[in-house]
Amino acid sequence: MLRSCTAGLRSLWALRGRREGAARLSADLQPARRLFSTEKAVHKDWALPNPSWSKDLKLLFDQFMKKCEDGSWERLPSCKHTCTYKSEDFKTYFLDPQLVEGEGLSQAQLFTRGFEDGLGFEYVIFNNNDEKRTVCLFQGGPYLQGIPGFLHGGAIATMIDVAFGSCAAISGGAVMTANLNINFKRPVPLCSVLVIHSQLDKLEGRKLFVSCNVRSVDEKTLYSEATGLFIKLDPKKSST
Ligand SMILES: CCCCCCCCCCCCCCCC(=O)SCCNC(=O)CCNC(=O)[C@H](O)C(C)(C)COP(=O)(O)OP(=O)(O)OC[C@H]1O[C@@H](n2cnc3c(N)ncnc32)[C@H](O)[C@@H]1OP(=O)(O)O
Image (tube, rainbow, N blue to C red):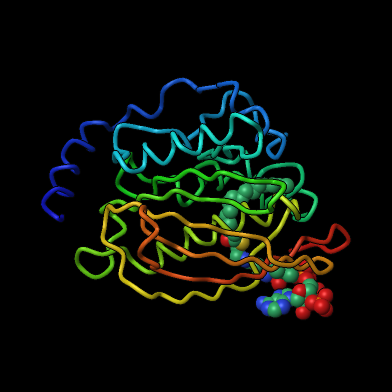
């Protein structure tokens, strides 16, 4: 497995630079764009297949895109730079403009999108609004290694947080993680594809309780289970 990962690494480096092409604006993005209302049309969407995606990831992606056809599911676009966090919604809560658009932040980018193709976090999230749940398809690349040959627990936690964040934001708007609890049940082989099923369990005032399980592509292996608490930011409170 590691050998194929290393071989993949060589071809991945060859792909450097390809991702900075023109923005892809396809019709299937339109429903999800409602969440990202302040996004400029020029931002590239990273939650789309690239040559580093494994056959398994592409297959699952296609299956979920089919589910989007009747409108029950939607694919969430993903930006590398600030379109999510610089949204007007978040500015409301961070009254000090330095925090969201200070000069020192010109290089800021979303942590999970900061790697070259295939080396770090490759993922896409699909949302089912009626059922208040999301499915995140995630391929963890070689730069996310923890113990040799396996994904770092922090990388898994990060992906769970992102999946939870999306699930909670759909119901709560501008939310932040207050608590995460993860049970790591099996080590995850590096470069494998994971399916993270998240759901909103309870909404209690500003508190959104979410849970998820992390499984293999064939759903037979349960790698992790987690719960989280997200808090809808209160416009009357400044978070600074
Ligand atoms: C519209 C835009 C869409 C955008 C589309 C986004 C797509 C998304 C994709 C990316 C997704 C990335 C996902 C990364 C997400 C982070 O990485 S966020 C960064 C990590 N988190 C933080 O830094 C948060 C730090 N903590 C804080 O700032 C504050 O504690 C919080 C969470 C904002 C809450 O503060 P607060 O608003 O003052 O709330 P507070 O009154 O203290 O508590 C409210 C209630 O929650 C309870 N509570 C608060 N904290 C806890 C806790 N830890 N445990 C238990 N209960 C708690 C309180 O007891 C209280 O309960 P009640 O008394 O109401 O019953």
